[in-house]
Length: 63
Image (cartoon, rainbow, N blue to C red):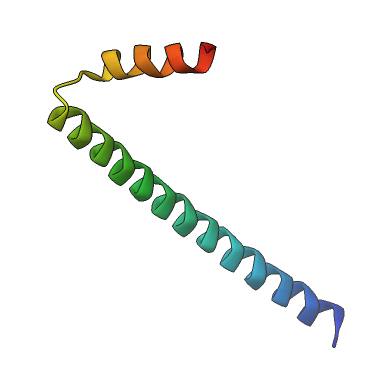
């Protein structure tokens, strides 16, 4: 394979990698948003604010 062909292949792979990284970022952001929504729903069910939950968690970490 010629050097030019290898460079072209490398460029295509770099572009593909960049596209996959962008997709991964989007998926990760979506998952994080869904997890936060789930946590907020649980807190609502428990009638607890995010601040109260944070204080509770910080208190447990110190134990």
